Each structure stands twice: as structure tokens, then as C-alpha cells.
Length: 309
Image 1 (cartoon, rainbow, N blue to C red):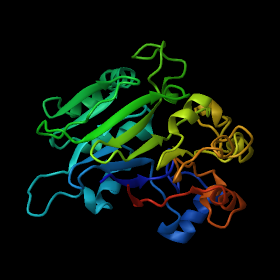
Image 2 (tube, one colour):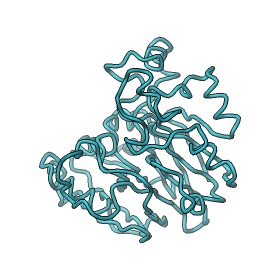
Image 3 (tube, rainbow, N blue to C red):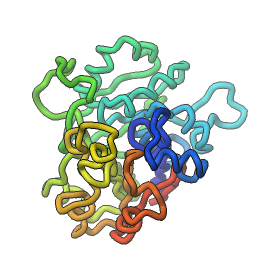
Image 4 (cartoon, rainbow, N blue to C red):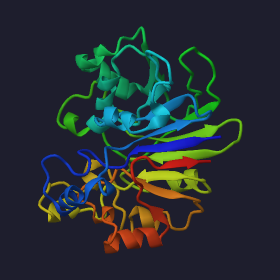
């Protein structure tokens, strides 16, 4: 049985962002935890005992403490049910949480070689002693079975695939440690329980909904999809940034080429937006944007949402 827990649903900075006074952040502060979101990550398990994370956000310690499924087992002095972390990109909000996992428990980091090169180039990640924390390269369109800390099979299959995106923003204008050619900076994942055949997709960063991507996910029981911005220029209009969503590697929810319209003709049992920016009005429950997203069959999740497939 495949279980998935949304650890965080927000984009970088979370909601509210510490230095932001936009409507979404003000409303989240005024209305308490109901509207607050930590930075995007999910955990999944095939047996309910051993768990894998997709990305490790800067809010990871808070997320783990808020998720009973990921607590040490009763009576154990040192223990974690986390067997591995799969990285889909090298942005700060996907990798910084690894630094909160430095206390010596064994697990494996799975990532494309381009992302692993960035970790190697930043010596602070050496606090994760490779005697305990192995770094396993993964390849595009090369399925693999993540292992448990003792080397046993997990019974899960992970298929990484390339999606339209870009390298981390902090590398703009700089030499990429993993080289500038080829794909690998932005991945989507298909996670399958080999025993039941149940699967879900995780695509938290995507600059364009291509026909190939549509063909890949059509018929899925569950899709987590990039919900960073409602419209491409919303951060510019709000005075929050000079960048569009697409220039940051994120397709808008709305518009003729947005995620809602482009995916409307697919058969998807459950559609959940993830990595939602504080500028996105769809975060607000009473907003016209939220109502439009929900009318199209999309869900805006709260942190802690659990789904069983």
C-alpha cells in the first residue's frame, strides 16, 4: 500500500515568508496555522514503516516534528524511519534541509549527477559523512529501487524523467559544477509500489507543459504538480520581483498555456498543486482563483495531508 504525506506545500520562503508583507503572507499571519505552509516536500512509503523524502526543504526539522509517521520509534534512543532522500533539483528549498539530517543516522541521497556535483562543490554538505549518508547518482529514464538502510529492497520503483526547467537561481551567470550541457537540473518522478502497481507523480518544478509530459502522466491516480504562480507576471505586478514565473522555471496555473488548461483533457484521478508561492492568490480559500482551481478539479493541500493509494 503506497502512502504519501505532504510535508510542505509552499514555494521557497514558505507562507508567510519571513520578510514579506504581501496579501497572502499578511493573511496567513493574521489567521494562524490554517493558511500557513512550509516549503515543498513529500514523504512516501510502501510499508508504512520505512519512508523516503522527495526533496529536503529548509523547514525539514519542523516538518519531521509535525509528522508522527516520521518520528523515531518508541523506546529507541536513536532511530529514524527515513531511508532516503530523492532530490529533483538543486534549489535551496530542495536541498538545504539535508543539513538538518547530520546527526549520524544512515540514509541515502539519490540525485542526478548534476545535482550531486553541486553538493560536492559546497563543502558545508560534508557534514553528512558519506560513511553514513551515501550519495547515489540517478539517471533520466532509468528506473531504480531505493534501498533500506540495511540494503534490503524497498519494494518501490522510482522513475526519474526530465521536465522543462532551469538550473538553480544562485548559479545564474556562474559556472555550473556539473557542466552546462544536457538535462538533469529539473526532474519529475514516477513512484510505483511494485506489489500493487499503484503509482503517483511528483513534478514540483516545470516551466512548460509539453505534449510528452502530458502523455507521461495521463491516467495517473495522483499527480503533484507545480503551482508556484497563478499568472506568469504576478510577482512583477505585485512589486515582489522583476521575474516572471517562466523565467524562474515555473509554468503558471492559469492561462491558455497554464497547467490547468493544458492538463484539462487528461484522465487524472487526483490533482494537487505543490510549491505554491506566497504571491499566488489561489492560496486564499475565498479567492476567485482558488474557486477556479477547485472547479477544475485541483486541490491546494495543507501541510500534513496524507494520501493512501
